[in-house]
Structure formats: structure tokens, C-alpha cells
Picture 1 (tube, helix red, strand yellow):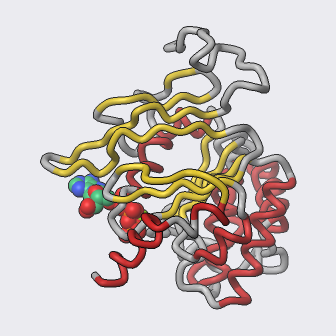
Picture 2 (cartoon, rainbow, N blue to C red):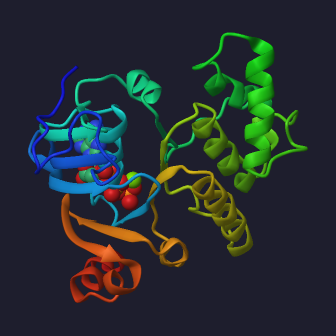
Length: 257
Ligand SMILES: Nc1ncnc2c1ncn2[C@@H]1O[C@H](COP(=O)(O)OP(=O)(O)OP(=O)(O)O)[C@@H](O)[C@H]1O
Ligand SMILES: [Mg+2]
């Protein structure tokens, strides 16, 4: 195992409760001339909800890709429970408990809701019946019970978002990254999905949430990290962060574009 030395400054193998569950350490991702993620560092504690905000192109999705393995950092480390996981493939990271949704959703439209979730459940079992039972339970968790046998292509947009969350949690993750799952939904749909996410949090999941809707960020209101042009420009509780002049400026800049 590629482990980090157990010093007082870093998380060790067999990390204690006081040590970070996840550590992002000087993570940088360059695409040719563009630095999409620029020397970003922060820790995530087990059971936390961390919101990631920032204007379009700030590097939020790229950061998630570094965490779940769709991309490898150009430099810096992604550390999960004391283990450097930079070079692990997405499926290997999923087995270590990292789940996510994608900003561009790809449900298998010809399959039913329960079949879509079963695809994820097969990470942990090869038994069809067990995967199906697990998938039904997941659909209940995301508020889709009764819609199990509906084809994904026939679900409403809000139901499809719930299905995406269900596909992520079917892998039985310990941490789930949600990439703009609320985008484009109306207020009551957003409120419904907030309740689903709260339920997941209560059940013990650690959550990282990319969100443009600041009402949603306020609703979760734990820790907020602001990215702008790849760099972390602020970090703190929602009330403090959303009133900071440089954060407001980053968002006003977005509106001007
Ligand atoms: N595979 C890639 N190759 C080259 N450039 C990329 C790649 N992926 C992302 N980028 C660039 O990196 C920057 C950050 O993109 P990213 O998608 O991470 O932003 P974001 O904060 O998620 O934006 P949005 O709010 O629009 O989803 C952008 O300039 C984008 O064009
Ligand atoms: Mg994005």
C-alpha cells in the first residue's frame, strides 16, 4: 500500500477519529496550458457535508474527477484514510468507498429504475436476487419506491436525479460526491432532493456537494469551499463565506459573462 508517513502533520494508516477521513493535498491538474485545479488543499472529516462552489469553469468537476479517479493529478495527493489513492482506477476507488454522480447524467434509458441501480449493486454481489433487493432498498432511500419498474427514459427530470443519487449509493459508498444534482429543478423538486440528501447524511454518509444554487448551500450550511480559476479562494461556514467580498465578486464575474 502506498501509505503516507504517520506524522503529526499528516493522516496515518489506521487514522484515529481526530485525523481527516479524506485529505486533498496541493492537488493540481493541468491540461496543456490550462491549470484547471491549482494547488488545492483541504481535509474532509467523516460524516461531514462539504459544499464546493465557484463560477463556471472554476475547476469543481475536475476536482471531483481527481478524487474519484477519472483523472490523475498532475501533482499533489488524494488521500483516503491515510492511503494515497492518486493512481487507483475509478473502480478501485469505488471499492474503497468513493461514490459519485456525474454532471452529465448517463442513465441507461431502456432499463428500468431498479435495473439501473442494480448495475451499481453488482459491485458487491454477483447474485441477481441480492442486487435486486439492494436496489429496491436504495430506490426507497431516494424516494423512488413505486417507480422501480419504470424505464429510466420515462422518469421525470427530478426523478432521474434521484436515480443518479441511487446509482451512486448502490455501490455502498462511505463518501458520495454530488455534481450539481439540483441543477434545473424547480424549488419543490430541490426541496425534495435536499431531504433525500439529508437522509443520506443522517445514515452516516460523508458528502461533498458541487452546487450553484446558494439556497441549497445554505440549507446544508456546513463547510463551504470556494474555487475560482482552479484555486481555493475561501473556506468556512456558509454564512461567513457567502458574505465575503471576493466570493461575491467571483459570482458577479460569472453573471457578467
Ligand atoms: N479533459 C479536459 N481537457 C481540457 N480542458 C478541460 C478538461 N476538463 C476540463 N477542462 C477545463 O478545465 C476548466 C475547469 O473545468 P471544470 O469542468 O472542472 O469546471 P466547473 O467548475 O465544473 O464548471 P461548471 O460550473 O461549468 O460545471 C475549464 O476551463 C474546462 O474547460
Ligand atoms: Mg462542473
